[in-house]
Amino acid sequence: MTDSVLTYRDCYDECKSIALEIIEEHKDECSEIEEFMEKAWEWVDQHEWVIYFYRAHQFLAAIDGNLRAEAEDTLQDMGATPESYDDYASQLTYWAINIWVSQFIEESLQEAA
Image 1: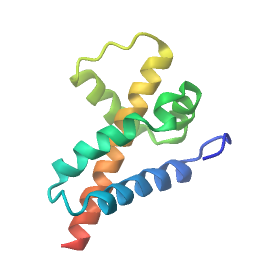
Image 2: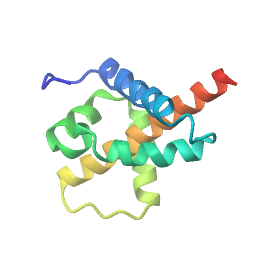
Image 3: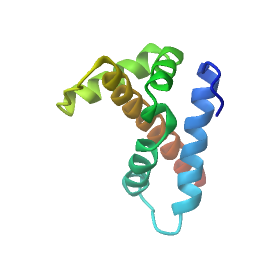
Image 4: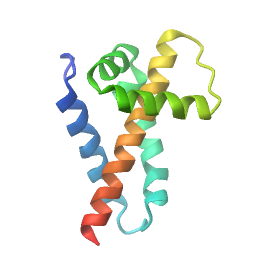
């Protein structure tokens, strides 16, 4: 990824790519979506959009409101208490990416079945 401003397409394509890479790398050891998602959580936690605040803000500005709202609901359900505005953006980005990656993994597994 470059430092250019993120677009919706960039975000969509990257999350789909993450999902496909996780499936490819772990297809021999995982069979259920939950097993793949355990791998995804670790992967997403280290993604540049999560660890760099300015990228988290760009990601959130690029995605649609429904995904952002779903991430906000998840963050609230987890009982998280972000320490700052930037931390909040990072945590929202983490959950939004996880939501999208989960959807892409599920779709890919259904298509392969």
